[in-house]
Picture 1 (tube, rainbow, N blue to C red):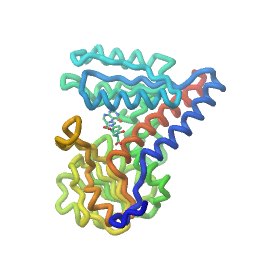
Picture 2 (picture 1 turned 45 degrees about the horizontal axis):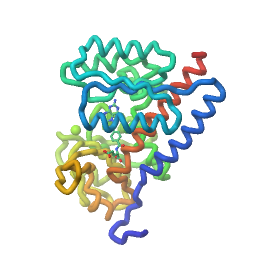
Picture 3 (picture 1 turned 90 degrees about the vertical axis):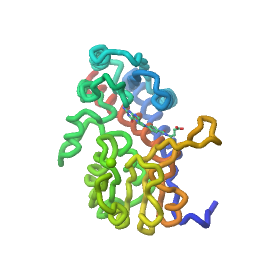
Picture 4 (picture 1 turned 120 degrees about the vertical axis):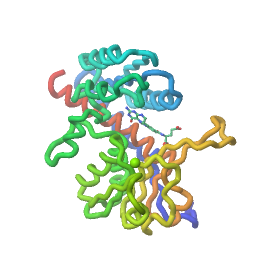
Length: 300
Ligand SMILES: Nc1nc(=O)c2c([nH]1)NC[C@@H]1CN(c3ccc(C(=O)N[C@@H](CCC(=O)O)C(=O)O)cc3)C=[N+]21
Ligand SMILES: [Mg+2]
């Protein structure tokens, strides 16, 4: 129903992700017919963080829904660096495993970089291996996988028929897993890209010029109505827990964008939840199927 206080079209990430799940389920069924085997994703979790457990459960459930074999590796919080490394190396050798996801963050005593370096390039479904990120930076080079969250942002724009080419895009945040790769992907899609971050003076003046805003700063509801150019597309990557005693868990999840304000000026806006989050999982499935296809094609 038309909401008079909203000029923005709401980008329904949940519905778009569902359509992608259906496409993937069909591809998986075809692969099974052609090769007698299905893609396999190892989902590795270390420790018992509640948020990580929730995300990992969602990823495993999504695999099951589309027919991807999820290989569940649940490891104790006190696992040593060496033991975790051994687990990853073992998964690299396992022919039933086409993708390896090591849920982040890892416990403090683990060297995250060393673990991500160990994931085989051809199984790096998160796209976090430095060589894949390096290739993402280079013209004419293709990483084996592109990080799921920024890839999901681009997919949201494309499937919503929002033009990227020749547009001004501003990314808010410069993290390794979202802001930086999102900027690179927008550039690859022929946008003119600016990145603003925690040390940028007057970021609102720069965001206000953008046709496309990717909000990935990790600051709850930081982006207000007066930051946004009328008609702009606003993709909200934030997943910030804010205290809310009326909720069962005592908190709710809000984005980096003040949704109620910004929807009155933006042309398009993705909500939280139900925007980028489900797309992150859809892109993980996509990357897993693509890695499996490459493995099957090479005779594995
Ligand atoms: N190796 C690794 N790869 C990741 O991709 C990765 C990770 N570690 N660590 C944590 C972040 C976070 N992340 C999310 C995935 C789905 C939702 C998602 O589907 N959210 C739902 C709501 C979920 C809820 O109800 O809490 C939504 O936005 O609608 C959110 C966040 C993946 N991450
Ligand atoms: Mg930042």
